[in-house]
Amino acid sequence: MDRSVRAHPRGDRDECRDPDPAVTRGALLVAGTTSDAGKSVLVAGLCRLLVRRGIRVAPFKAQNMSNNSVVTLDGGEIGRAQALQAAACGLEPSVRFNPILLKPGSDRSSQLMVRGKATGVVRAGDYIRHRDELREIVAAELASLRAEYDVVICEGAGSPAEINLRATDLANMGLARTADLPVIVVGDIDRGGVLAHLFGTLAVLEPEDQALIAGFVINKFRGDVGLLSPGLVQLQELTGRPTLGVIPFAEGLWIDAEDSLGTVADAPVGRPGPALGSEWLSVAAIRLPRVSNATDVEALACEPGVSVRWVTEPSRLAGADLVVVPGSKATVSDLEWLRRSGIADALERRAAACGAILGICGGYQMLGRTIVDDVESGGGEVAGLGLLDLDIEFAPDKILRQVNGTAAGLPVHGYEIHHGRVVRTGDPALLDTADGSPEGSVRGSVTGTHWHGLLESDGYRRALLADVAQQSGRTGFLVSQEVSVAAVRDEQLELLADLVEQNLDLDQVMALIDNGAPQGLATLRTIRA
Image (cartoon, rainbow, N blue to C red; front, side):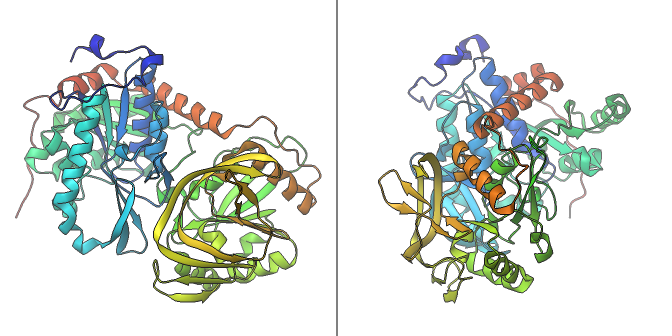
């Protein structure tokens, strides 16, 4: 491919171009040795770097499994990582970038989203029945993107080494084989054993899959890369494939973490800056078993002097200035867990003592009086915590929409992803939507809303933190008037692009994008029954 033909001035990258199915443009698949190895951030960094160079690029993840999602402009639902990657490309989120999304509701079943819309619930054992239909959808979406954009950077799912799932694989080597994509495999050295992970990932694959693995990338490296170099030389001797880059660990990267591994109990969220005043605010976010859109609380962690932690037991609520009950993909089940864990009792005591509580989506529903759910759990009517005067009923159709409005005279925005509807409320509304209808609830120190992303509204977030500080008597806490969550996100994308530019062999990567995997790559001997 002639890169001079592909390159466009940065300001022209959103021009429309009629797709030509006969034209196949450059593409690359980034796979990983494990979940959370660094696939999402490497794709985002590559996308932003290519945009910097005037190349029109789009992200693509054929199939994702995550309860962290966003709503597209056309009312579809995609994984949050693909929304971040779209932002890296200067594009609005689109269902084209993530046509298949699985949202786990239990250990054995997931809601299946196809092109952004829920089509039913599938169990792990019967997913193979959907394989052919979904494969056609994935292939068509990728072909369309490749015809329209100069480059498509694809992200794998989990690991291609999950050979027990190879028959239903749509996102790793199944996609690479279908679309003849060159593949680079990224491994997280922070976990240890990364050279074995990289070698083993290649070794267990079928020879036809191995032929598309063109190189490796090591992520989160700390220390002297010279100490690692002999291992990289041996890895190339063993596999015939180069290591295309060693990406250093960067503490500043944390926002929009999609994987559930990012929501570890008692772990801090983000890297908050020093307090502007003499006191900090403490936020306890309840780590529900089926937490969804956990990234809602990251906006709070962007604020200087605000410490946010995930918690799973009641004692952790005692010293918090604000407790957040986040969204859930299994509202009734997670409500039962709140009761079993003792956190429900701690929330009731907190409300009685006028401690601040914020419920978001499923968390909001749990704070009400009753939940009627014949859709998600099939549990019928169950009692909520009763901290809000609110009744919820689940409907088969999921509400998916971006929303705008005002709260306390301040502009707010967000998005909704839920089956539950408010059928009765006796509390004042938290905000007014753009069409004038009320949304959310306020009852003393307890508030709730169905809106995800509300805390990214900078003015509203500042007002909330000021109220929490006043309720808690934190007179020494000062709210920043400068933090912009959108700016923080963009700064992290720029940091990712810098890391890729400085630590990846871009000539080799661009050669793969332009020309595909080299011919004649060595096939490792494997032991097969």
